[in-house]
Image (cartoon, rainbow, N blue to C red; front, side, top):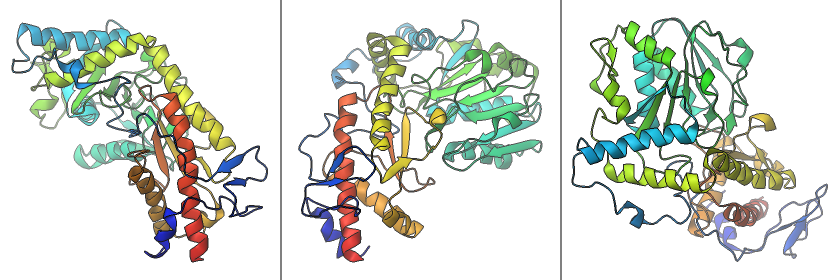
Length: 426
């Protein structure tokens, strides 16, 4: 699309589908569908245009006033600081239903830091199966193969929108996987595929699944997530949850590589228990801790874990119902049983879009994102840089259903502007 062509993107009406469409009308009928798609610029705007997949939208009603009780200017090692950090850990345990004999730590560097801590501390004792079907999973493959340089590694991968064959996983080995593919919109359907009598450890990156999906703790040994995802917390703090089996590995196996200070979970071959009581390895932000405690308060008010899951699933269902009657868009994940309810990834399917080169598709998708950003309607809904061109809309619990509903006509409007510009240029 040339620069001159983009001028057409500012008109208020466009043809949505040339099959039976009239460019003089404000709506276009979709053959085979049960509705007309509005192409006039909508009047309503979401109350919150923040649909980013991380950091995610703050909880409804959030203001900076919730931070007024933060322990700023004080040491996190003070009695009051330890109490807040311990509360963050134990309230997380209660909300997520984490068993009492599991250990929970607050670690630096968000979910990435938590995953790296698990990989560096636990892997190497036996072979490992690495599951990768999106960008972050592929990143963990790179770390294990090129940084830790493990030799006995199997990679089970799949294209964006698909899962690997879970039946091929060998649970005599350690297994590393993402519960939810944040950049592909694909999640594992449940934990039934994980062997209860496994010999190896399961290491699960659950950062866009925790607080939005049911995690079966009996099948998981090391689980990581961050505050910035499903609860809309602030960045740079991660959480690492370890089962008794994972603790046993830590205390009976010493990796062959030097262990950076930030990853050291043991002392003299014994678990450093203080880390799992809020005595963090490095200095946490007490502002962020206060913000997280506020998010936990709100989670309790909306019904706890099941309330959070219901809100996320409801938001995702709004988009699913819309996709079902909209001919130019579809999910990246074709199988409904593995579609994410948080990071909803969409792809454009109109013939005129499919006919373009990949570079032009990327430019077109970015143009839609830019249009909605400029209108103040939706921020940060572009696809992840390694994923196929499309949209990614966060539908976690901190998003209001009404805002998702208001967003959808804007997507139709932006797509209509783009299609009219394409047809005019053609």
